[in-house]
Length: 90
Image (cartoon, rainbow, N blue to C red; front, side, top):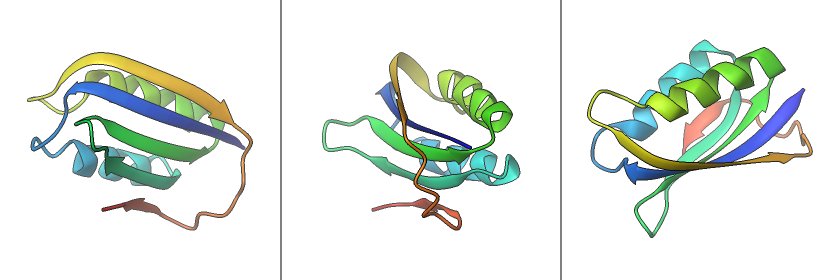
């Protein structure tokens, strides 16, 4: 089990980025959440198998078709195993 927190900076608001992340996280069997931040970035926390975490990182670096990724910050955290699904947080 692995847990990461990721901050995605760029053109990531109003282009269905959160929905893109949620759909892919669910397909990969990951739990956690994704949300927009006040500064216009997208932040997410993922928990799951290392292979799935690696795949979601690659997807976050690419984003949906209208996205422009300027920077990504990834922080590894201690898994908490408290999530039962993956959600968009408002």
